[in-house]
Image (cartoon, rainbow, N blue to C red; front, side, top):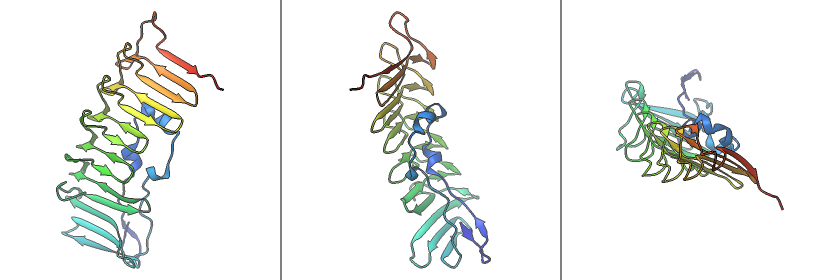
Length: 232
């Protein structure tokens, strides 16, 4: 936040890592079982204008907020024509600092975008964006990942050749969640295995789907199966 001489808010600009790392609606239910404070970046706290000073350069193209007493930079932003913008060769367009460390966002003409690496990154998360859409060649690796999750996106859709592996992977201490997707739809040859697998505390759910639709030869088995292992 940037304050004028009266202590009133003049500008508030912030992002959340939750928005950048949130899973698709289809998998949100399972992933919401895990909630961690480090997955969120709150707005910059309200600070008295006596404690911070702002440095505005180039007619508002660059803004820096620094804590006066320590000299620690809290916030840096670069804009062009009013929107976040900076050449990735020069560095991130937006950098914020909080108790969890530094967070970097690469913007081009107001959209998250970077060609040579993740457009968002901090100590725990990274996400690849092209023109505002989650995108990375699945052969190069996941477009979004954190300590527990890997997600393969191309053109803002979960996408990965099922023969190479699942497009969505989440592994916890006692759970595992896998989705095989092609162009945003659950998809896998039933002969190769289920398109969705969820395991947690002895309970296993699997779904066989082709291009999003239930599909499995009835003579082989059901397309949806829930099993529970015997407990000792």
